[in-house]
Amino acid sequence: MQSTDRSKLLLECVDVGYSVGKAKTLLQGVSFLVNEGEHCAVVGPNGAGKTTLLNLLLGLNELSAGDVLYRGNSIKGKTQRELAKLVAYVPQLLATEIPYSVLEFVAMGRYAHGGGEDDDAVVRAMEMVDVVQFKDRAVASLSGGERQRVCIAAALAQEAPLLVLDEPLSHLDPGQRLEIRRVIRQLPKNITIIAVTHDMDWLLEDFNRVLCITGGALKYDVDVEGFVQQELAEELFGHGLGGLVEKRYGEVKT
Ligand SMILES: Nc1ncnc2c1ncn2[C@@H]1O[C@H](COP(=O)(O)OP(=O)(O)OP(=O)(O)O)[C@@H](O)[C@H]1O
Image (cartoon, rainbow, N blue to C red; front, side, top):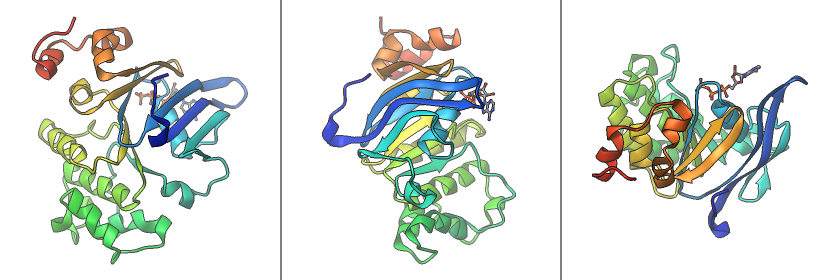
């Protein structure tokens, strides 16, 4: 496990496991620590257990083993409202059927705080990702990238210290991917980010830490330099980083 400064410790995953029924174990023995302000990429092959891990961090699934602690407090027994103050979620892409305006949707992020559309935090969140100009538009009328910014705004309105994102770039065109990357990069430095991604360019550019999941276990917990030097992309996906490393570092690391 990567060493962590305990005074800044936000999240502890302690021997976390998740099983379905008696026979099927989707995740087991996952332990790691995350400091406030870290940007952690969760990577691994399809079906490795990445989304399962995020669901446990969000309290959406009940732990079968181990514990998840935020600032030293277990999530066990916490209500959804209590959890929403600790961790916010950004999905792959918001469905177009959402029947709300942007303002109404972002205001839902204040549910845990009992706030609404006139809450200052709603305006602040919309300003952070530059969606104020869309506030009266129907979410359904927005482009994919715009909808993703609205989703991030709703998550920011929760004012949770941890933002969890599940492949937030995967349905976007290259231009909108870069735009969402810019938005996430410019978020306040104290917001901790854990994002599942298959985008190695984004990983190299904007994350400091990589959690590698394979076969329902945390196989490597490394900084980005370690991910590159140990050629873990090659090991995980059978496909190296190629020219991305040169682009990131200006030279190939050996
Ligand atoms: N409720 C469930 N019942 C049975 N199996 C499940 C359930 N949920 C997930 N799985 C299985 O658990 C494994 C891990 O799923 P998970 O969605 O966490 O993978 P992932 O790493 O996020 O994959 P991907 O990169 O394809 O999104 C998969 O084989 C999936 O089919």
